Amino acid sequence: MQPIATIPSIMICKLFYCALFLLVATNLSAQQPTPLKPRILISSDIGGTDPDDNQSLIHLLMYSEKFRIEGLISSPSFGEGNKEEILKTIDLYEKDLPKLLSHEKEMAAPQYLRSVTKQGRKGAAPFKGYDRATEGSDWIIKCALKKIRSRYGC
Image (tube, rainbow, N blue to C red):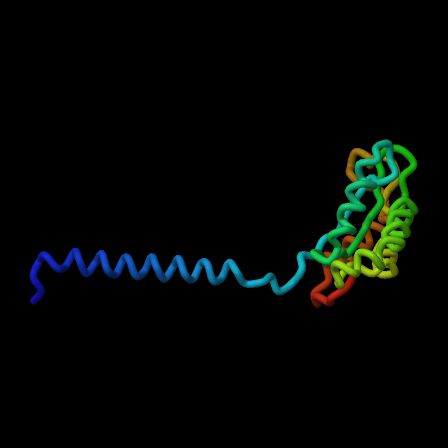
């Protein structure tokens, strides 16, 4: 039988080693690279009454190696926006791509980005939220139902 005075010492040692194990395990797991890029699908009112979405799309394309861009949907509720605005931005991105590739080799290919660019509803949605399917809404459903995670697109 152990003396009473050593029991708290043993418990403190066990707690210390458990805490140390959890600290090391947490640090090691936090440093593991993400195995898959996050899948994203962008719905934008680009080309509408405010240029903020043009700027945001350019910003996204500069970081395209970080994500699996599965769709670029134009769905403006005001103004004259359409998928042509997205395609114009991709054209500008393509002009700078050779310079960008010198810094990052996995930038999204312009032809791929064009293939996932779709037109959503133009104008305000009706009270019930929808009235007919669009190229963009069909694409969103296709991407959401995709079971096999391929490297590019739906």
